[in-house]
Image 1 (cartoon, one colour):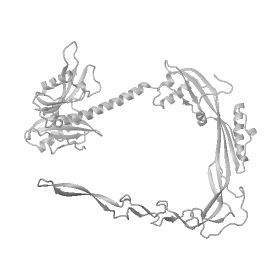
Image 2 (cartoon, one colour; image 1 turned 90 degrees about the vertical axis):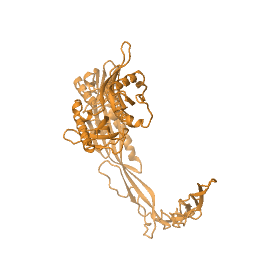
Image 3 (cartoon, one colour; image 1 turned 180 degrees about the vertical axis):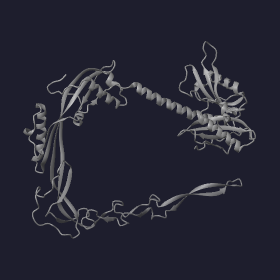
Length: 550
């Protein structure tokens, strides 16, 4: 739809192209908005941005003073008027202030702040010359605690504390000299600089001000600020010392009326005795605005505007890409869940077998369940425990580390990672399946880390290459530091990424010649192929010592 004051309407293809550019620049707006929206109507109109800019000079006299030190006084002759002093005007629109001392207005007067004395009362001590001592808080004494030995009535002694008060060594009865006035109670007057007299005079303050009056003549609901900032066609741009309403080219009755109103207001600044108009600029710019009514899928009707030479888009209430939001939230939730699983799972496994129950009397073969989640108790954990017992044999501790160690959990299936201690120290992953058609939960072993298999990567073909390198480094370390000592128990306690492509493995082991209760740990890091790995043995038993990685 167009009218006499409307630009040529953009076709649907250009409207959709502009909306597509807009959608790609907004994170939550569907990228396919321009291509898939259903356009119902396009209404093209002109909007006009009118601006009148004026440079105004304002002048006024103010009273001023300075300390009198015997300098010459200019007090003879008639002072110049408000507009007599010459002040160079700016060449362009600007805001600037200049101060000029008015001639023949000097006079010597006694300083009103100090009464001609040159000194005023100290504001820190209020003229007393003393302030409270900061060491004793103004009390004049300090308290200290002394310990004394006295008989306890049974042939021995006991120590008793006693508070002793002693005079403060930094003050006189809680008072010290004021640091600002040095005990005199008075300080130099700042206004007259301790001279006692002032030279009073008048100062001419000249202010150059860039004053702007603007208005938008708009028949659409597009915000005025967007019209003012948009690029468009300049219909009129006049610069002069004073612009009359009759000097502006005709645009339309509405625009002409706004221009005349703004110029009339600007001319009022030139009628004051203390201000004058230096020069002006009047500009009228028109901006093409296309109001588009559309629907997104089966939703209610919406509006957006395509405006300006650059075809910017204003689309309040644009549809939201909920699928993208849900995807982002899912990724964030998954990352948080995986991080918690790694942190808490690795921590429980590292502490559970050898440290969390250390020293607790437990009967051999009777597991101690330390599951914090109620879902891990009952039949699910019972089935997992039996599966561990069938593979491991007797054990004295069983720690449920976490029950959802990866995100793609199958319906009716629980994935548990358990740590155990007994004849062996290790971890095991169990898959527990919900009973179908009666019966109990069934459990199968998915992965296990114990005994000596970790030192021989060829028996674990699924191990990543960087992890294999770490195991080999650990094996070499044990062969060098403990030759001939059999490794009785060995288990991978925790695995993780240390950043920058570094894989970290912590290994717990027990040597045959060691105390059966002394479990040692070794940590190792491995990088991508071509980078070296290293490991370190802890110096104390049951220690979780993390090693630096290359």
